[in-house]
Image (cartoon, rainbow over all chains, first blue to last red; front, top):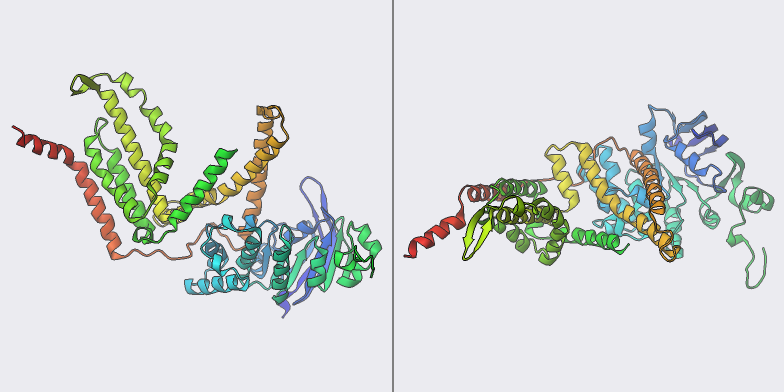
Length: 251
Length: 270
C-alpha cells in the first residue's frame, strides 16, 4: 500500500524572521514503520512535523505523502491521511465535551450521524476512555487528555500518525500505558521526542536531527550505541541502556 | 488570586448543574431559548413605574427551578454578582424623580424609588432567567440552538471558544500570579509595571495558543462550520411548552393580575 509512505526530499525552511530551521532534510518512511525523530531543543523537530500536514509550506524541497505531492490542492486529502497529535492536549481538545471533540473530525468529513457515532465510540474504546465521553476536557487529568487527543485523531482513521512529545508530562504509569497502546497500532508512526527510552521500546528506526540537518538515520539500537554521535547532537544514551547506578554494572 | 480561581470553580458547578437529567434539561435547547426570549421581552417592556404587574412573572423562574431541580442559593448568588450594574443604572432615579406617587401611611414614596425598585426587580428576573437557561441547557447547547436559529456561525464559534478556553486562560493567569507573588516581598514587584508586562505576556501566549488551536482544527478538516454531534429534535409537547408559556407571558403583560385582584378585594371591603 503506497499511500502510507512519507517521503521528504531536501526540505528547507526559514522562519520569516530569518531563523533557518531546516536546511535540507531528506528521508523516506514506508508503510507500517515506526520512526522516532530525535534531536536537541530547537533542532527543527517541530518545524519538520508542521510540514508533514502542510501547515508550513516548504521554502525548498518536496514532500510526498502517499501518492500525492503535498500542494495546496492535495492539502485536504493529506490532512485526512496524516493524523497529528499535538504536544499540549489543551490545544487539541477544543470542543465542550470529549464526545464532541472526537466527533469533530468525522463530522467535518461529512459522515452520517450513525457512522460518526460508531467511529467515536470505537476510537474512545481503543484508548480506553469510553467512560469519559460526556465529560468536559478541562476536567480530565493529563494522561486522560492525551488519550482523548489520540482518540480524536483515530476517529478519522488516518494512515499515518504523527506525534509531538507524546509522553511529556505523563506520570510513569500513564506513560507506560501509552507506550503499550501505541505498540498495538498498525499505522505508520512518526514520533518526535526527547524520551529516548520510549523510542527504544517503540521505534525500530531513528532519525537524528541537529541544526536543521539529518545527522543520522538508521536502526534505533545502532544509533543509541554511537556515543560520539549522541554527544554531538546534544543527546544521551537512553537510561535503559546505561549501567545500573546501584550495582555499577555496565552494558 | 483566589477570587479568579473561585469564579473558575463556580463555572464548573454551573456545568455540573446543566448536566442533570430532568424533563426540563432534556427539552430541545431552541424551545428554552425562545421561551426565555419571550419572557425577557415581556418583562422589560413594562412602563418604568410598574411593580405589581411584574410579580406574576416570577412563576416562570420558579417553575424551572422546581422542575429543573436547580440550587436556588447558588443562582441567587450568581445574580447578585451582576447586581452592581443594575444598581448603578437606577441609583439616581430617586434623586431625579422626587414626585410622590404612592402614600403609605405618613411616608410618601417618590416615583424615583418606585422606578428604581422596578429596575432591580426586572434585572433580577431577566438575569435570573438567562442563568436558569444556561443551568438547564448548558452553554454549549445554547450556542448550538442559537446557530440553528440563524445566528451567524462566526459569533457562535466565538462564544463556544470563549467558554472552552476561559478555563485554560484562568489557569495560565493564576499560575503567573502565583509565580509573581512568590517572588515579591513587602509589596514590591506587585505594581502596575509588572502587571502590564504580565498582561502583555498573557496576550502573546494566548495568540500563540490560538494559532496552535487553529492548526489542530485545520488538521481535522475544519472549514468554518461547527457541526452538532447530536441532531436537535423538537417534540410536539415542547412546542406546546413554548406556546403555552408565551401565551401566559403575553396575557400577564396585557392584564395586571395583582391590580385586578386588589380591585376585586377592595370591592368587597365596604
